[in-house]
Image 1: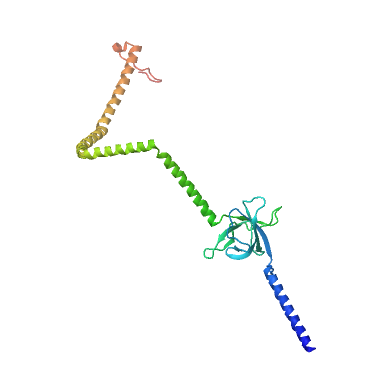
Image 2: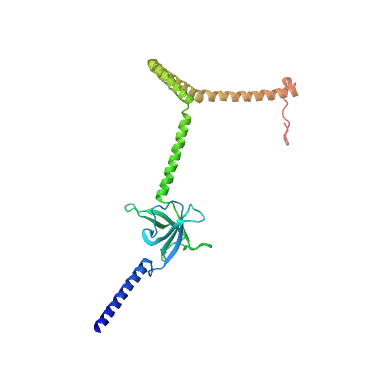
Length: 274
């Protein structure tokens, strides 16, 4: 009887332990924890190759959640819809931006969150949205791909421009120009001695003209300081003589007898007797 009781106790204990282990596994695998999570939506405009469900979500390098689902947006197949489960204590604001990132060594793809704004207002769901939507920014590979595509486009444009310039007519013109330059340089080379003589003669002529220029400069200074003032004084005297003769001429026209009688004395003023 005692043996049967012992087996019953042991069996019951084993069953309870197995049940507890199964419940613990279910509890852990279902992601249940004491930490509250909040769900957010992210609409990626690029390929999410390498990103898997349960991939980490990091905020400034700190693990704050996981990717819960990955699927194409039903309204716009160019968008990849991601559902993120993030700790409720994470400061997700209107300025928070989500980016697809990859670790350099391990190659693990994850979602990186960072705040690029001073607006710290908590992000909430808009009307008609099941969850708040976090804005996205292009990943490093997306930016590199954009730059490389732009460089390729620029190179194609340059290639087309060069091909447009190198037409048959332009090539012939360039050939003729090079031939003319060759002829000109050959002519200059053959006449270099004559050109040197011309330069030497020009230098000598300028040296000979230099004293003459200096002499003419001195003469101009003498004229300016001595001759011009005297001539100006003579012109002033001539102007005064001309005005005097003009007055005499006017008096003769009015009274010709002045030549015989002379000019009449001026009239006596008040109180004068002579």
